[in-house]
Length: 180
Image 1: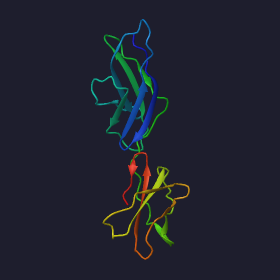
Image 2 (image 1 turned 30 degrees about the vertical axis):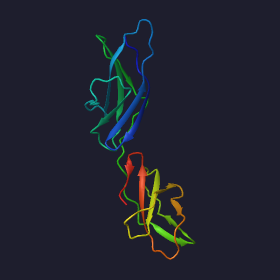
Image 3 (image 1 turned 90 degrees about the horizontal axis):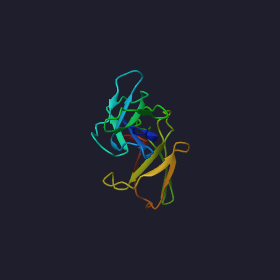
């Protein structure tokens, strides 16, 4: 008999769910694991299985899912000739698309710096904001600055007084980063 997998974790992605788990506890009577299978479904719909094929890796990605729909996922450790015993993830998860672009940022000139912010979005899928500025008309951009959803304000320092800067804002979440 192959024991159940342990500690299943699920992470929402854009149109997908990433799963990871720990191998079953082995005993003197345990059969060796020869494969893992992972699957998810929304409601009572059809199961969608990972496409990794035969693998001993303790992770998989289920893709082709609908963003915003809740999915229940399961993982099974497979042994030779043993019946498949699925272990359910502790909670359902909904794939999450990239957030919408935020509103145009407001920029305040400071001494050798700018303070940049956006009106905080109403979407609960935003986890942070990112800002970039360019002193050469958009040919090159500064390293992105990150601001929390709570404050949505950041300060870009070490700029040159008298140079015109163009700035842009992005919204971010675990699935990715919005358009500017």
